[in-house]
Image (cartoon, rainbow, N blue to C red):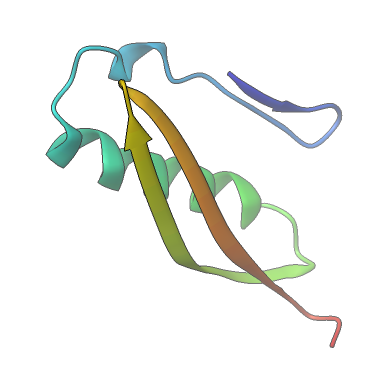
Amino acid sequence: MLCIPGIMELSFNDLFGRERQYVIPMLMSRIKEALLQDDRILNVTDFNFSIKHNVYNVSFTVVTKYY
């Protein structure tokens, strides 16, 4: 679960045991959808996944209206 108090809470339990080809796009979609609820965030880009022993490490860029 990813939780940022007062901002968002995402559960990923339904993704356990699924194929990577399904999990990666779902993670991207859920993370992007959750972050874009904040009107200061314009986009979420450059997702990078590393997977080792079924542990997913995800990095991405958040584009905000602040430069």
